[in-house]
Amino acid sequence: MSPLPDTQHWHILGAGAIGSLWAAYAYKAGRPATLIMRDSATLAAYQQTGGFTTQLRSGTEVLPLPAACPEQIIQASTGAASTGETISALLITTKAQHTLDALNAVASALADSPLLVLLQNGMGVAEKVQQLYPQATLLQASTTEGAYRKGPFSVVHAGQGQTLLGQPQAATPTRTHHYLDAASQKQIAHSLSAAPLKVLVSDNIEAVLWRKLAVNSAINPLTVKYHCRNGELLDNPVAAQDMADLVEEIVQLSQLLGREGWVEDLLPQVRQVAADTALNRSSMLQDIEAGRATEIDYITGYLCRLGESLGLQLKHNMALLEIVRHHHPG
Image 1 (cartoon, helix red, strand yellow):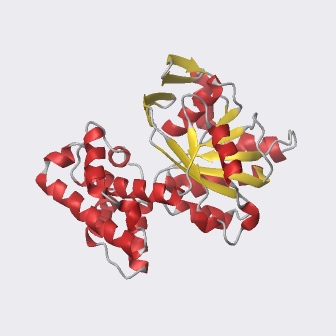
Image 2 (tube, one colour):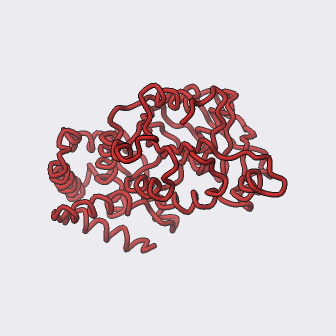
């Protein structure tokens, strides 16, 4: 791919907490970015509010973040009144289960060789995206930035963290023309950085994503099972034992995959994360309470499928998978 200009226009697919957080800081930094809303009705509702209410590190204000719906994006690239603008760089912040549908909605507006960056929880989506869009250059990212929505068009930057970006090695051997060297990846990371959000390059993004997946899978589904905040898992001896059992299975799977180094001291970290986020209601629990589909198939489900393919049954994880699915079969 050609070098990114300093003024690269990023489209952001997914107007949730993380997507709107990135759009807000890009706007404040004078960087061109367009937030892609779910549909025209959502866009109309947003336009009526006059902007996003943002509670950032610099204070609270209403920002008129540039936004569009898929129909507008497509019209701009291919319609009768086309401006010829296509999506050349796309930051994807949708939930894992919505990624393919959301991408499909704007597919005809993608440039011939677009840059796609996946910034979301869970695993298993990247392979599907690369298969469906082989012409794309795909990177993955993971963030510990804390953000949540207070309302439909309101975002709070609750805690500053770190964002790591890299190219999954599995995507490069058969697609050498899409391989990015370290300098190119740093350029993309710089393009996505807007103070105080700083994106750094990881030389092993798979290990970063695997570790985060492991931590999420040992906390989020359990908050659904026990209908509790993260920290309450540590106060409940039965839940705490469940946590240890889940981690033991994840370590076994990691060893089978030759990834034991990726899960060193995993249980202490899981407990620490639960303690550090003690008052949080996990996003999975919030989805269940709101009657929404969860990311379970890309978190626990991904681990269970991988285990089965290797002849390893993760019985505690599988039982938990069924519990969460029972709460929301879809």
